[in-house]
Length: 377
Image 1: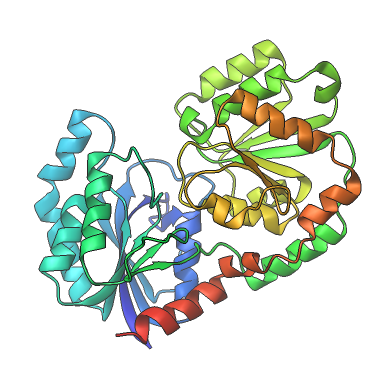
Image 2: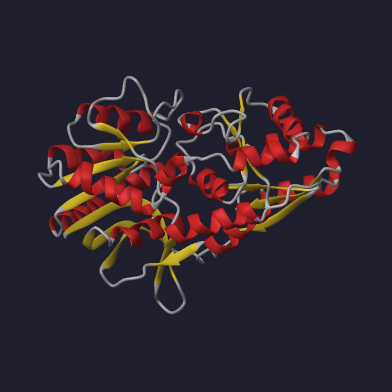
C-alpha cells in the first residue's frame, strides 16, 4: 500500500464541535481511495462559514486534512489574494507532498497557475494531475487555458473527461467516480419498480445560475402550452446560487411548477433522482458532471447539453437526449419530445444495458488508478 497527497480547491468547513467536513462528492471519493492507499493527506481550502448539508466528514483517521486559505473568486481583490498568499500555499503543499509517495493535483483552479509549475519543475515526487473541467473548452479563462497548456507539455499522467483524437499520450480518459456497488444495486431495483405516468417529475442539480442553464429551463417551461404543463408534476431544483431570491420571485410571479430544495445531503439528492423521470442540465460548459451518471443510475433520463465529453456517454434517444441548440427553443424541443414518450420508449431508455455506467463506480476508478497510474511508475 502507498500514501497520497491530494491538492485541490475543495471547500471544507469546521463544524461547531471543531470537526472538519468537506464537499460531499470529493470527500466520498477520497474515503474510497483508502482501498488502494493506506494514508491520504488532503490539502484544500477551509472556509469560515456554516457547512451546507451536502458536506460530509472523512470516515477514517487515515485521512488528514491540511487547510489552505480560501482564495479565489471573480473580483480583482479575489485574484490578488491568490497571488499574495502564494508563498504560504506553496510551502504548505511542499510539506504535505514530502510526506507521501504520490501526489494528485486537481485542476483547473486559481492556484493552479503556480502550483502546477511547482509540481512539474520543482518536485521529483511521483504523481498525476486530474483535470476535472472541460478539456475542450473554447473560451476558457487565461488561467485555465494556461493550466491546460502546461499539462499538455509535461510528462506525468493527466486524467481527463472524454475521449479526444488529439489528446497527448500522457492524457488518459478517466470517468469521475460517483457510485458505490450498493447504489448501483439500488438503482436496478428502483428502475424495476419505476412507474412512467403523467404528471412526470423532473430535477435539476447544481449551482442555480445562468451558466448551468437554469434560466433556459425557466424560459423553456414558461413557453410550454397549458396542456403540456399538465404533464409536468414538479421540477425539483437542488442547489444554491447568488440569484436564488430572484429566481424564487420570478417563478412565483409566473406560477411555474418548480420546488426549491437548496443544498441536500447525498442520500436526499439520490431520493430526488429515484422519484424523478428526467434530469435537465443545459449547461454552457462542463467536463462530465457526476450528477448525470448518478441520475441515470436511478432511471432518471438525462436531458443535457451536447458540450465537452457529455456526448461521448449520452447517445441521443438511446440513453438520454442531447440539446443540440443551447437556447430556450432547443430545450423546449427536447422537452416536448420527452413529454410525448410512451411508457415502452421510456423504459427502453432507462433499461438500456449501459455498461458505461459501471465506469462511474468507485471500484472501477480505483482499479484503473492501480493498473494505469501506480503500476506504470
